[in-house]
Length: 333
Ligand SMILES: NC(=O)C1=CN([C@@H]2O[C@H](COP(=O)(O)OP(=O)(O)OC[C@H]3O[C@@H](n4cnc5c(N)ncnc54)[C@H](O)[C@@H]3O)[C@@H](O)[C@H]2O)C=CC1
Ligand SMILES: O=C([O-])CC(=O)C(=O)O
Figure 1 (cartoon, rainbow, N blue to C red):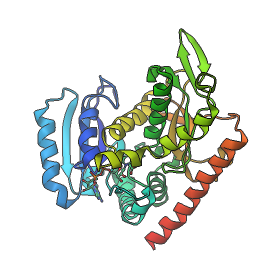
Figure 2: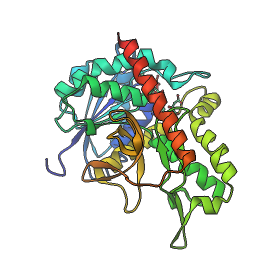
Figure 3: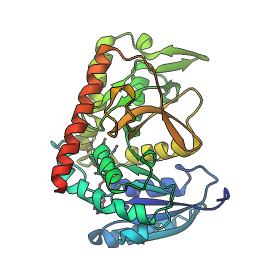
Figure 4: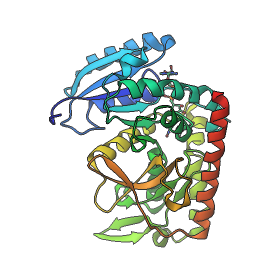
């Protein structure tokens, strides 16, 4: 493919609230860069067909220079045809008072059903990002029911949690968010996730300093900071009566952009990817790790020092993923 060939990007659940925030970002180049033309494939279900038509009309009305075509459909096969990137948002969001795994039975069956459509119709090297909750387990189900898609091409979104952690540190230290780097989200996109700042730094006047040293309050870092990030999704639902949408859409663009175009030098991001056993995480689980990306491939950052506090939290979130996997399988029987 030459650089100016359009990239086909599928967004499922495109008539929903994340979809509505995400498709204009993609059409403006926030996902694949300002020179990369795109063709948007938007999938939703029959009850949302009229709303989906409306989104397509608005995309036409916005006259995006990079947008070379729009497919808006309720047919999953048509939606998946030749797509290079698939952002799987379709599903049901949780409501106030629920955990993300409470939408499991409704959502995992969607991912089982759509796995084969993707496998059979998408481009052979299609990169898949699962956003719908429970994101890690939906991605795991998709991976199991689409065995010919390479494991490394199926990921889930924990970049929103990563960005939330950057945001909390930036507010606490009164520094710009782009000067904070190398936080890590370990594990599940759920309230057991472990936001870890032990390797994070802030750049000031050309020098890098450890976040722990600058914050100088281990008590805050080991308690309130962690729970704020873990519970941020619930806090947004409480405030908006709807779950996060603009931040989820923006983080989905960050995830794909860094995966395709590469992570900046000496920094990493968090992605939910299949475990190869790194850091003692059960192989095959979709677990959020620190990764660097180059030439369209992610690599888990190896050999970071893990203290006892972190080990315990990393194991607890892994254990939840093992349990979710069993629960998902029972929902599919
Ligand atoms: N991983 C993450 O960081 C985040 C994940 N989420 C999750 O993303 C998902 C979408 O959230 P919203 O856009 O707020 O929900 P929404 O309800 O506004 O939109 C979801 C859309 O999916 C559609 N849909 C349902 N079943 C479908 C199917 N089989 N195929 C295609 N489309 C289908 C619905 O008709 C709806 O238009 C939820 O599961 C939510 O919990 C939300 C925020 C962050
Ligand atoms: O909390 C939710 O249900 C939506 C979500 O995943 C998030 O905002 O992180």
